[in-house]
Image (cartoon, rainbow over all chains, first blue to last red; front, top):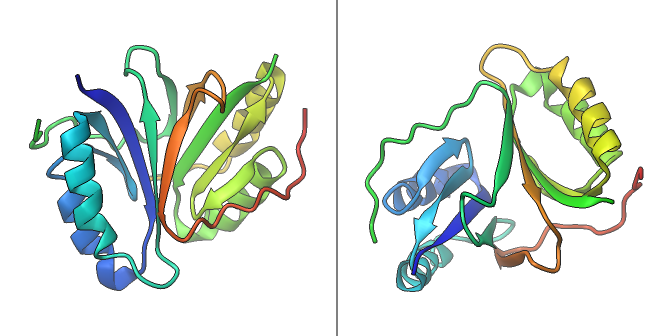
Length: 90
Length: 90
């Protein structure tokens, strides 16, 4: 069963493009450094294994494991930059 | 009753310092552009009113309303930059 995940990252400029590229293969881009989406456990493990290799020094990435999007209330101020078009790997 | 909130923002450089300052009066800094913490409804409204005034053009801020920290599973890759010391307004 897929659960809803939220990923936010604070990564140095040299790696940020690569991290973004990997994440966009699994999740939806919400805004800079923020991705969301449903993923099964196996894909989460795969994703984190790939991203972990890129993190160095002061880089940080946080994954929030949420149950479902339906039970997640969210409010966007300013522009909603999320584009729900994206390649989903499940 | 306070609920657990997660705030992520994607704000232009001119405003990012002010947004950070306001948020740090209400929530804990987790990493750049990411704050977390318990807040009652009244404080959330107050916080969003203050932040909304600063957002212009392409600025975006997302608030995730979560039930409780206990039911929130979270994994940090790289450095855990969260400092749990911070002024809490409840």
